[in-house]
Amino acid sequence: MKKDKKIVEEELEQPLTEQEQEATEAAAEEQATEQATETPSVEDLEARIAELEDKNLRMMAEFDNYRRRTNKEKLDLMETAGERIFTEMLPLVDDFERAVEAMDKTDDIESVREGIRLIQQKFLSFLDKQDVHPIETDGVDFNTDEHEAITTFAAGEDQKGKVIDCTQRGYKLGDKVIRFAKVVVGE
Image (cartoon, rainbow, N blue to C red; front, side, top):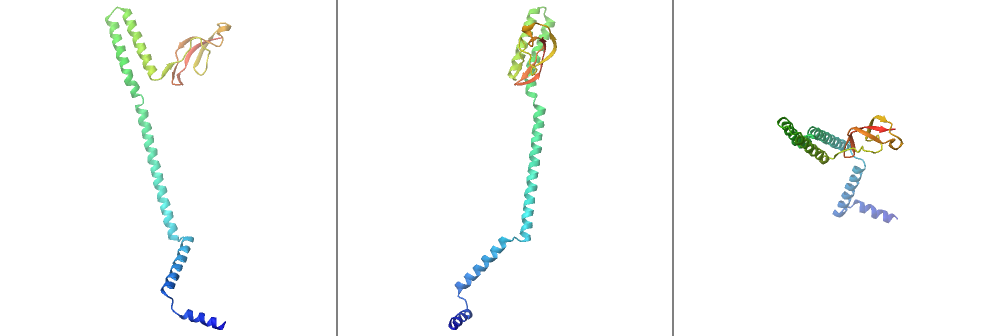
């Protein structure tokens, strides 16, 4: 054993070879890297916090810009939404003006009536194109989702709960009621 101990001591006193030195340095660097990744320094943490704060600030600014842009688009849409409809109604106004002129110039009441009927048909066609349809009232059951009862009328057992008369026509835009039909209901 003394001999083995003596050999080990001699080996320790001898200088390290280049390969041994490189291996030792690599091991030391690896150990330092492991320590650095296990416990980040305060500077690294502060840098990460600053990076996240910057990212958060940019995201908030981007969302604020998005919100402002969409609100502006909504406002523009609301301001000009009716423009197309009014533009399409102008030919009807022209037709009414021509009808009024014709009433002043002629005594032929039948031609004026026919002109008014044509304007009415043109206007109903315009409404149909805009998906506006009249609510059916002739002989149908009273429906509070579409009709507004202005009065009731004793009409017999077969007319009970049915629409007897319509005093003002109601309209739907698509499936939404935009004006209820004012009706007389049988009781």
